[in-house]
Length: 480
Image (cartoon, rainbow, N blue to C red):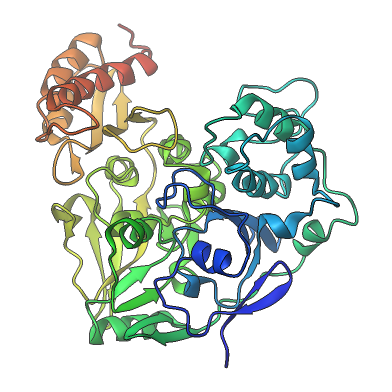
């Protein structure tokens, strides 16, 4: 049976295409050159396309993703819309029309990517207009969330005309085909097996089949959103002999907010988790908008972020502060490990070669005081120089419990245990916090690199704790 992707309403075959070919290159080779390669690492958004994905507020949602990062096999059997499929020069899509009339395009290189990201927000089922002017500088009166464009960069037009175009959009027309498409389910994940030039791509239909492959081939590369692996493929020429896609496995996409814990499937994307939690874990609610960009969060999974074991990943500091655990699965069974014990060295973990992350567990109840601080050169869509997650409980004016997760200051994400000890049992006062901040500045083994110096990172740790205290100055009747 041939393998195909439905693009702009027509089926295009991917048989014989090398498995490490990106969706972007595959589309461009077929004459669909609207999507561009600007950075090849998911930062510029010039390659944005729309994919029909399972929705939370409707059966299907048009989701914007980076085509430059996805291997072509990952979209086998799926449904894609490119900028060419939205409209034409003689029949512009409403998004294209607003961008054109409001001066949102000059050289045009980034425009198709902006249009696709903007269209995903245009079709968001729960986008609702608000009366009057925008309630803040990131949301329009038509309900448009500018974070939808946080992964799209423009070097010549400027962002005001693009924002104006976004805020001018109304609701889709009653005869809008793409709007109507949301009412029926997306294509189910197609079990896929490709073999080209000695390399293989597999998308098994069930978790047990994945675990069987890992038992036989522990060197296989697991991919979900491919937001990390795709960069390695594009910029470093990494070519794994076997790639296994797990992003659509039902067993890895469970979600439950129970009385004692939150269970989050490893293959849920960051965007999906954000919407499913709906602010019920405030620490994560603060982290999500600072985690890369909406385009990346639409593809990146929580299991992938932990699986790469990067010391500068944004999720680990937050989850460490929440005392999260991981469910690791293999043919030998499942085991639960504390995230604080999971990282063993630079990009090394307790996970065995034949295991994968099945779920993340967050114990309840949550501490009443929490925050996520990210220090980076850009406000959004950037890599952390330092990231800190806080979870603190104060009872009768004394710190009864403190959990602090750190990223960017050592070879692994880690708990700031000395600082936690310096806070626990002491009064929640400025004096206590200043003394603990001095301890926190010594946590980890920060290094000098192009993002920040070691001394800067240490200084930011101490300042972060003081900032956290200022954010929660009065607790349980105690003040400075």
